[in-house]
Every structure is written in structure tokens, then in C-alpha cells.
Image 1: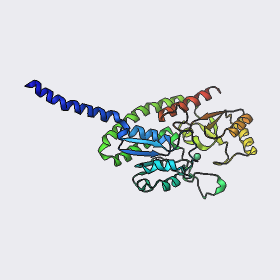
Image 2: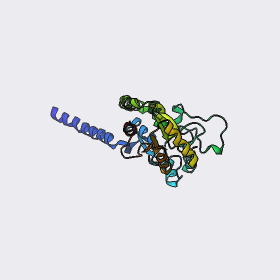
Image 3: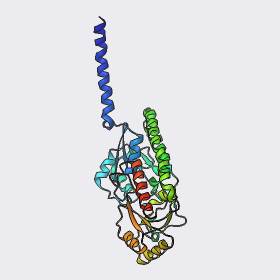
Image 4: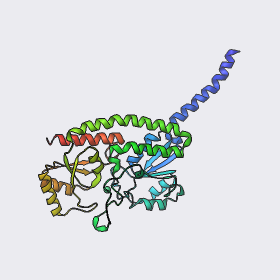
Length: 314
Ligand SMILES: [Zn+2]
């Protein structure tokens, strides 16, 4: 009698277990929210916070220049199916995202809707231009420097901001989102200390960069920004600009030019030749090189490369 009862219980229990396993291993196949991001940097954090709940895809790859992207129909199609669009804002994507939004035919992700999230609202921008702007100033970012994902100090507020928004869209999953967020922060915080310790011996070291890609990164680690190879954003340097900068670099003992992988390195190399400094070409985004496959690995890679290059100059 008991035996048959046990068997009867066993049957639905095993079905229940199979169902549970299916839920656990189906992963993003059963995603409750389709998220599209403009960069792999954002996608990496959404993946961490929305683990098991969201399917996330980036419109660009980490080795692409996100200032200039072709507004292709294939990207519009991706946006057409999205529940949520997350972008960096501060005009980083101003040349292409409005076109994609127009072509996407998706009312849920338009400006002002819950499916439209401007991540720059989570941070305090730097290098906000003062006074009137005009075209003679180059492709200047009118609302401040949009390369804020390269500030390790910005990652925590960004993660909280993403988690809050996902919880609003998926209120029944708020507890899981909170637990995902906590897991990420617990991994990230010890790394912050590690990177600071690694960079500490190089505080106040002067460096030159090609574009203002690295401003947040340099500020966080207390490196001194002496100047940029491009005289204004998006404008190529003249021979006199390069000569003047090379002169300043010699006076201030600058040994390093930081160069993002997607810019042609002709002018950085020319400047290196004139000044005696070396060019260090680096990925400014997750996915820029295979080693930088997520946010933590990107900072690991950057800190390792920069500390190695600065050590060899001593
Ligand atoms: Zn820029």
C-alpha cells in the first residue's frame, strides 16, 4: 500500500524536477525581456544584472568607433523586436541612433518611454563645454565627455541604475535582480582596490592621448593629461600642432601616448617619433580585444597594459 503511494508521489515529483531543470538550463531562451544596447560595455553590465531574465545584444562591437556607425536596416530590425534600449547618451550616438530609432518602428523604445534608457543619467559628466558651441570646435560633445564607461568609479552607480530600471519592468523578478546586482558588486569591489593598488605607483605620471577617450580613466587613477594628438575632437592634427605638442612632451617628460584601437595611428606614431614617447594602442571597450570579454576583464587588461608600459619607462 505504502509502496504504491510512494510511487504515485514519485511520478509527479520527477516531472516537477524535470521541469525545474528545464527552467534552469534554458537560460536566455526563455528571456522575459529583450534588451538592445548601443555598446558592448553596457551589454556586459546588463548581462550581469539581468542574468537568467534578459536577452541582451549590442548594436556595435567593442572594436568599432561608436561615434560613427552605419544606420543599417539589420540594426533597425534588432531594435524592432526589443523591449528596452539602453544607450550611453551625451551625444556619443547622436550621428546614428536617432536614424535607427526612426527606422525601428517600435513605439516602446522611443524617447520618453519606459523602454528607452539613457545611461548617462546615472553619472556626473566631465569636460562639459562652457559657453557657445560652433562647428569650428570640431565634433565636440556638447553635454560633456561620453566615454564615462572607462571610469571604474562609475560602474557601481551604473549597475544600480540598470538594476532599478530592470526591476521596474520586471517587478516580479526584483529579488533576483537584486541578488544578481549584489553578486556583481561583490566581485567588482575587490577588483577596484586591486586596480588602484596597481596604478598607485604611477600617480601624477603625465600622458598624452589621441582623443579624449581616456579622460575618466586618467582622472580615476590620478594620471595627468597633458594634451591630445587631435587638436579638436574629430579633427586631424597639423604639423605645427604635433611639433608644439612634442615640445611640451619633452619638457614635461611624457613617455606614453594612449591610442584607442579604432583610430588610425599615423599621427600618434608621428608624434612618438618627434617626442621620443611610445604609442600604446588599447581597446576602449568590452570586446575590443578577445581578452577584454567583460567589464572586469577590460579594466584588468587596461591596468596591466598601462602599468607594464609605464614600468618599462622608469
Ligand atoms: Zn568622443
